[in-house]
Each structure stands twice: as C-alpha cells, then as structure tokens.
Length: 251
Image (cartoon, rainbow, N blue to C red; front, top):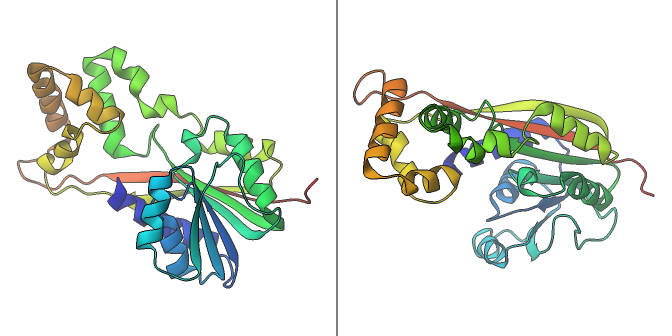
C-alpha cells in the first residue's frame, strides 16, 4: 500500500490547509512519509516525528534530510513532548492500530496549543479500500471463517461516525470528517494478485496458509470478479477517512 499511502498523505495535507510557518507533530511517523509531505507542501517551521519503532525512526532520520525535521522514539499514547508545544498534531494510517484511540487523541491534543489542530486519516477498510475489500469479500464467500481476519471488522474506528465519537470523547471541538479518495489502478490481474503472495499482513498471510488447490480456487474467484478481459487494467480506488478537530484550553 506504500505507493497509494503517499497520495493519501498529499490529499490529507491539502485538506488541512494550514498556514505556513507552523510547528507540526507527526505521531506514529513510521518511515517519515507524512513528514516529507508536510515539509514539501505545508512550509512548516519544524516537524517532529514520533514513533515507537527505533527502526522506523532510524530510517526516517537517514532518508528525510531536511533541517526542519527531526525524529524521536516515543509512545503515541504518552507523547514525550512539551505541553502545547505545537500548532498541529497529525497522524497517518496509525489510529486503528492503537488499543485506546481516545488516549492517543488526548495526548495529541495536549501537545498542541489551545486552538491548534489535531488530525488523522485511516484507510476505510470496511468499504472504500477496494484492493482489500474485493479480496475479503471473495475470500469469505469461499471460507466464512476468514471473516475474523477482515480488517473491515477488526478496525471499527475506520468509519466516520466512530472517528467523530473518538474525537469528541477526547475533548476536541469543531470536528470535521472527510473522505480522501485515491485511484489505485492495476495494469492486470497478475499485478493485483502478486502482492498477496508476499506473506506480510493479514491477507497475504491468509493466502500463504492455503493449500495449492485452495489458493488456486481463490485466485480464480477473484479473477472472475475483477478481470474484464485478459490483460486489461483493473480500475480500483482506495478511500481514507480524514478527521480533524480543534484543541480547547488544556486542563
């Protein structure tokens, strides 16, 4: 999903439309992709990326070579930053992986000054992430027990109503939710199918565990549903839900 994640990050930063010269906090920064987009499109004064993975932080430090950016190891639910230090706290494709999303949002709110922005975006696994939605719908039709692996069911926060509730529970105000749509075409069915053979993540892990005959059956099921003609492009899209709110006066 990396190639589509960058496009979602660009749409997210454009949607936020924050003024230039702000101090940004990127929570769960991973390899620094969102931080790079902020540097390129938001003209920030500084960007601090926080991630619990020392490996990701090392990668970001090695690849995001902008003096306005720095990266530190830290926990999203207990951010190691000064209170009200930032103008905007953002997070890309992370909130659904956090056991207590509201705690993370409250930590982000404390990190920004009153009136500052807190914003996140997450893939719409339940419906708009067609790459995975089409896979799981075909898989569950053949194997109903696979439903427990479906990200659409495992990540209920990836829905506009759930995001709005979490932002409200975290004390954020003026909450807005918006879809971010990204075109994700595949040049052929093989281009769509081959990433599922990699073994990383719930869907590829499921495919790897199948027998050869079961894998072939699923492959043909998907082919029959997606391929309009042999070798033709498969036009899919990916939707992320973006949410933002305004931090109030800190207690």
